[in-house]
Amino acid sequence: MIVQLAGFPEGEVMIYERLHMAPMLAEKSAKDGTYRARHQMLAMCRSDPELLADVLGHFVTMVSEKIVKDHAHDTRSVNSDSEIDEMLDDIKEAL
Image (cartoon, rainbow, N blue to C red; front, side):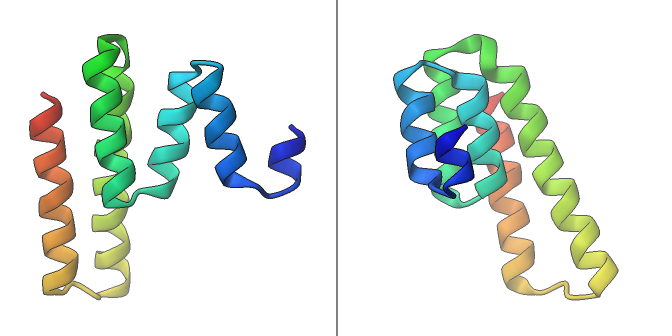
């Protein structure tokens, strides 16, 4: 809690890793949503198959939020489409 209140996200990640709190770590990575975070989530699935459903759920949520956001703001672009394609590839890889 102290790490969260202090606004120290790296500390949060470190605590989750050390305490083997994989679901919390996956959730934190999903909020980040970067390429690196998504691949960390994929790696966690390989080492802990019980996380697969959670990670797939996070991936689907991330893709649908991106699609809705782009559609609402009518900002569909090549970069946006390629990011969505990368996320869909991550879902395929997880499966």
